[in-house]
Length: 267
Ligand code: IPE
Ligand code: IPE
Ligand code: MG
Image (tube, rainbow, N blue to C red):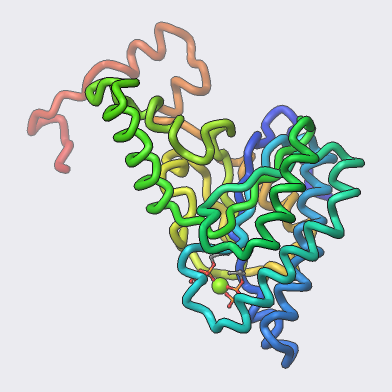
């Protein structure tokens, strides 16, 4: 039984759901079978977020780079996504889950986009859990899009170019209405971000697991949360500052280190 501190849960978890193809191959099945089975893992994680009260979950479902895959796999992925949203919608509504989308709508087949749009519209009033689906998404593309939108606002005289700050820039991103990403989970054993949420991950905690996505269950999610809770998120501060040492102690700690030869510091 994994012990979790309910006061230290992440508010926003993002997942790179990787390993479907290898999962299927290991069973001598077509890669698409792995994608289909991955839907069960999505259900498990969504349910877990609801139970724990984690209010934001972002799932990487299709990257800009995934267009390089065989056309038959891409077609199957769209078909699966459409079917999944259609079949889950009544349940999403019953459980008050809001669906949002991030990524480029251009290129997504019309019927898939329609299905998504109706799920987004029919769940827009819910606040219990927001599931954000990254579809036809790329982190670099998102940043360029934000820069373009900002440039247009400058051109239209709505804003001064010199007013730009990181906070203002964030408002042009798909995630403008979402809190900071606290935890990124990547299944499937790779330790890279694959063009996911590049701007947003400045202070995200990373958790990599070799478990393939279709095998990822509630117990694995809880283990990732437990690992997250062991981390000390310093955001540039010192550990002592965070642990709230007494004022006199922290003042001592904050004295600058003298970089003289006799101080013994050689690097
Ligand atoms: C992730 O699983 C799903 C998508 C990218 C859509 P993969 O299909 O990448 O599975 P592996 O990495 O080939 O095993
Ligand atoms: C990342 O997985 C994209 C999604 C999970 C949707 P990939 O399997 O496409 O990533 P790479 O190609 O191994 O980096
Ligand atoms: Mg992969």
